[in-house]
Figure (cartoon, rainbow, N blue to C red):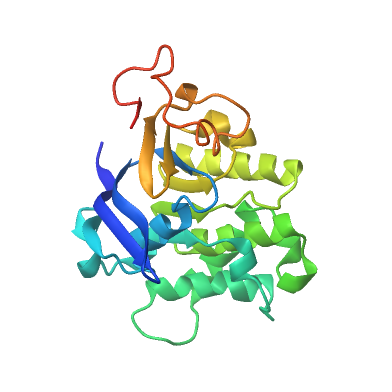
Length: 254
């Protein structure tokens, strides 16, 4: 199984404060990895660093075996930012937002073509919004807005989806829909790195969980090694616990 994302020793400082400290992270082809942790643990900073949106002060990142600085096939990577940041004040329709995802596949700016139109229509249909194509983003519910952002990433025909808290502020029904959608994508061969506070309906899909605490990897292993309803905060307030019963191999607390 090939590695689509490999991060080694990723260190990030923001405004003079160390946010990430020597973080290692791998995502393999077809793997669904959940990145968990409390607020301020560095989850969003890590996904922004591995996509090149936040500069690193140390460490290396490779995407599909290519160093981040030399990676130019941006269409292979689909990034879904936090909804609150991405949709604020956007005066655009569903179609326009999703079409913007096709820019990663173009060498030059210009008119969209039949391939673009087909990919956009397919992405919108896949997230269940075919009947809202011409709707303004501001007219949609939070769950629908999240699906639009996912469709934008899908329109690039990405092989790796990196999603920053897609379930935040989304009701249970929309979380169920998201789980069904992502399950289908992974089944079709896509890889997913997803930031979350809690897993909910996504839990059965997760191949591996990585927990960040104070900018470091505190746990890397199967979801079964975590306990409690809110996996992002499990054991984070009482220090590192003993190895959970039955947890062996690569699933370790650090």
